[in-house]
Image (cartoon, rainbow, N blue to C red; front, side, top):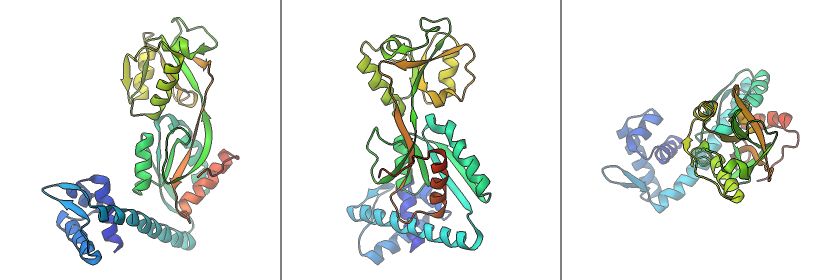
Length: 298
């Protein structure tokens, strides 16, 4: 039964029969047969079939919701039994927004010192992708914005406040200022993260409020590309303070942005499931040492 529910989850993630079978380590006929057995057992059609995957039926969507709960609980049960027998071990999957990647090591490094049999997989994802991956059980923990856009059925735990810096050439018009306003920044030729990033949507809103904002002259999903262009002296960029700490900012002036001086809460999001898996519960305990005021908001 559990393996067939895993097939449903893989199909929801991949939206393709062949890729879903590959993700589950089975052949496509085995996956199709398993889905058909599940349909026969429940007495309903779950998948709209054609020459390719077309989506889930209304009944299939409800079964998908239950599959997430049942498979999640099954994984949590196996993990808890293993922890009782062998101590905490396993693989913790973390998805973080690009601007939060700098601080993930502050959590994983002391965590692994306490639990040396735990390994990690860390991926960079947009805020929307993180929520989807948590819902589909593809990651265990997300690190993302927790107050700015709707989050859905997750528990949230704030970690830190994200503040913003203008990165600009030292010989540019704002290259020697101690502070800069958003209105001043809005008039510069800017290179910014791509619009699918929530960070970009936050910055767009603040620039629009400042008035007279010019469209960015360069967009990229690569932070390295942004900083490389700022180093030429021809562009400027706006990035979170923690993000800027990742780079050698030689020949770049980092200017705090004011009027307004704003911040956004970044935190941990996990599936709204009780009890949590031992790995997730232990990771949140580590996060409380990083942020003592850590508390549930969901």
